[in-house]
Length: 145
Image 1 (tube, helix red, strand yellow):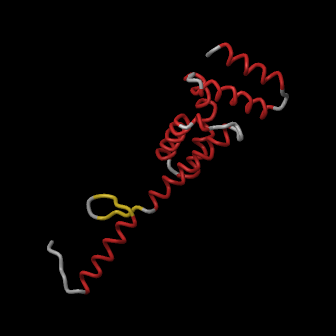
Image 2: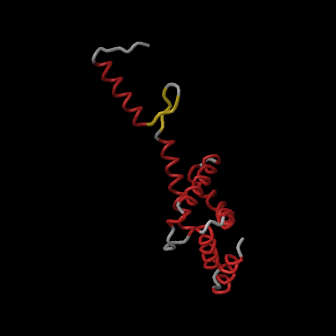
Image 3: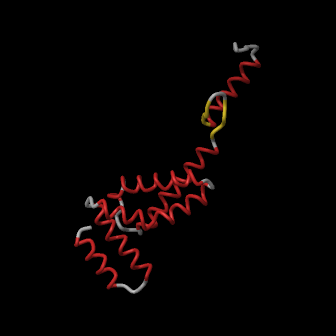
């Protein structure tokens, strides 16, 4: 880890007495380092927050494997869009929101899927197939099997 990054973290620690503020300032310094391409800074952010994000994801998905996927996707999206973080909100708040959206999307996709035939299709597609099947049976049309 670069010396400048460590110095920034130590200055942040010395400037404030609140533990929450210290964590936020350390996160801000790590985000600044990660934005410049320091992989170890982003690694530290992952290590600091993955437990909390995993707990959140597991509560939302109610499934360990899905929670692990949510954590991985959340950090991947966070890393990809890190340059967009302007500092108006805390990194932890931003990451939590990304994880919540990811978990909601995963849950929504699973809820709206219906098992039909050989594989999974979306609910919209299943509804379309049912409508077509109903209209075909009313018209006297019988598809070959």
